[in-house]
Length: 385
Ligand code: NZQ
Ligand code: ZN
Image 1 (tube, helix red, strand yellow):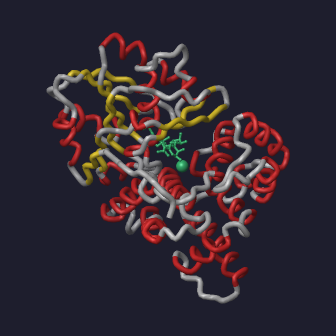
Image 2: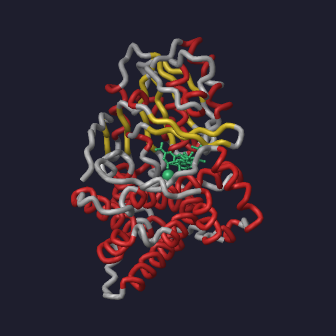
Image 3: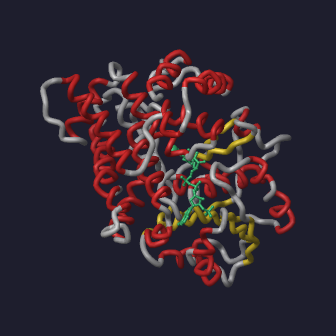
């Protein structure tokens, strides 16, 4: 196992009705910015619940945070923060709103000229406004991690800081009942790929992390399709298991002390930035191709994945790896996801631009050992055609 330091300070309030915990989490003398997206919280009743819970707080609102939040939209919140002396942001939504809250919270305290430098130049931040989250879409883990992804001018860039980790997060699985099948599929597959990218690398004899990761993968494989099946899709137990699995998939726990390979995400971000593809749909296309091209360096872990996660029982190693990759693709298809670039109407003619963008964004040494060069990324993209 590799050395690591681990802390996750986000207090999780999990279960039906936990939204009321917000009243005690946010100090009553705080000036709160209620942040949300395109309005799903108004149609599904979360907004009304929040209004009742925050009756003793001073609240201003900023809405319209779009999926894959843009720098331009997020910067529009800054005058409101100054005017109302906001010191606490309550983010209510999926990864986009919570990531947006993190950038807004950091930008509000940033002492340099342009807050975009936090992402473009990797400027470390020294402070941020406090953040609380009400998660409405289980997927990214953003509700209890330090990461944020923001887009500007075709660059989907990320930053991470302990200063923006939410102080608390409300995870009420009943609020996920209003999700479309498309967003359920996206969420389950995003969480699945987060787990794989911290697991399917090379072995460092990290038995606990491996078995946690396998448990999360098996849970998502079991419960994910139930959330799309009419007879079981409104079962709160199904939603609860998915919600907790997605949160644990990227809260730092399974990634502590193990190598990580974010190639699928980094190539996927370019697909979203250039073509507007939903985040998770880029992953369901890229992951199988990454596994195919990187099967030799990942061999031992692929065999472990085949045996333990997919119960593939054969002594033929090549067949076991082929079957594990095929099973992964089958799972993505069952979740309603595309698995090839052709499924989203992209082809060979788009690859040069995607590669140029990867290079421009410094993504030239990807993978668990920095060995994925642009040439290997090209092979991966061509395998995904
Ligand atoms: O905007 P509203 O109206 O709320 O609608 C949203 C949005 O259209 C809708 N939605 C959310 N909860 C709902 C709901 N609709 C009905 N009922 C509900 N309960 O879903 C749509 C998508 O929401 P979004 O927040 O964009 O989805 P997701 O949670 O998948 O977040 C994706 C973003 O997170 C980033 C991605 O890059 C992308 O920008 N990521 C963040 C990570 C992190 N912070 O650690 C890691 C991830 O790998 C990922 O990169
Ligand atoms: Zn993701």
